[in-house]
Image 1: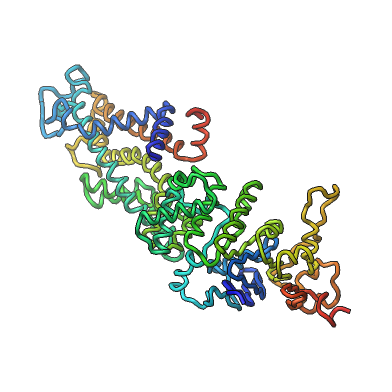
Image 2: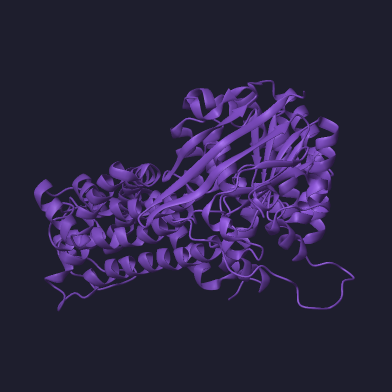
Length: 295
Length: 327
């Protein structure tokens, strides 16, 4: 009862903020299209990419092919739609994996502190010392091309950010008297960590994760663009942009539409996360509620 | 003789800092009998909270207990291993903190929090029984509509209600001793009175022994049978609250009582005690209060006064009252 009224209030606040609501709608559409992609592509074979249509190469946008066709005569709309599925898979698994590695390490390091905590945090710092994309490129180049390797290399360059965030949060929450009380009760350390500290510390991490979903898509596209990402003919958005690169003077549409898809999706995640940050920050939230949803 | 619930003897605690050892508590002794309440009264930095923390064995890591014993129901808490003590803490000993909002995990309802305490501390597993005990404790603590409070999250309750809820948790385990560390400081004045009333009522009805930590003599007068005046880590005066308020012996206590504002008094500048707390890294050799004491003589700066029983049950550490020393 209590929780549902809380959710209702959050929805209300989310809808009130037009911009973040637009972001929310974009993200929902993206997820929806991503899941349904194989069933809504006009030309499923073109989407998967193992076909040639020599008679319809480089056709500009028309009613038959709204996004035009590429060098092999494949329908770009179908490829962009199926591409959303790859972007969805990549963003969800990269962020999921990074959270799975980063959050427990930050939690343990923050709670234990001392030598163990320092050791864990210095390991995280070593990863943070490299520019994230550079580290991911190096990893991906070593592991070889492919969807799985893209996910692994991005997740490995990503987890330390969550570790840092979680570490700071845990440090401030572990000094609260109610955590002392939990210790006095004789609860086991894992129970204190995961039942008492984690739920109190996770909110900023989740907001950051929502924001990062967009960045993960962008970086995956970057890897593909640089030639260390997924293998052709996978219709991943970054790869589609690269494929159009060579013929951009003759056929602008090949790069434009996947590029726009990346732009809109990343923008959607950013707008949504911004709204989420506002409604989960207790101080901003009070302000939002008292002013009827707008700052 | 009555059963002594708590006996603190010659407790001496230092904090080790980079700038040297701070003598936070020096040779403090007192005792609490069953059903009795004792107030530790002192200004900020006098070591009163350090004493309370030492009893809970919750001192910060740089604190060291040099001497003394803390005996709860015949067992010395300081010579107990962690496992043995964990059975006592939160069961025979419970505590109420200053800030009630911070003592509750915001993600659990008050009921869930109490249930956890009863489950882990008293080993009760029957859910119906747990709820029954919890509701009764909430009612004892003076909360209305206990069913609603039981299902409420901390942010849905006011500060006063939360403090009552934490009192409920503290008494639900039937502790031998309740430590209240300035439990009314964060509340507004009308609520303070109500909470004190509740605690007094609980003490009388349940025969609760309470160790009250406060800087407020008014609070001491209201709720405590006995009072221990601490100053800069040392006990200066000890006795029944009534005696101390009526016939204060130590010059510090007298000054302290004079600086309490009174309603109906003439409008004039409130008397205060000139000077400030001594540097506890190098405490003065003689009486700790001598540098601020108007009546101090030569001996006060040289010899440390001992706690002496001036009237039966009324102790004071001041040369003025020891014969022979004072001309």
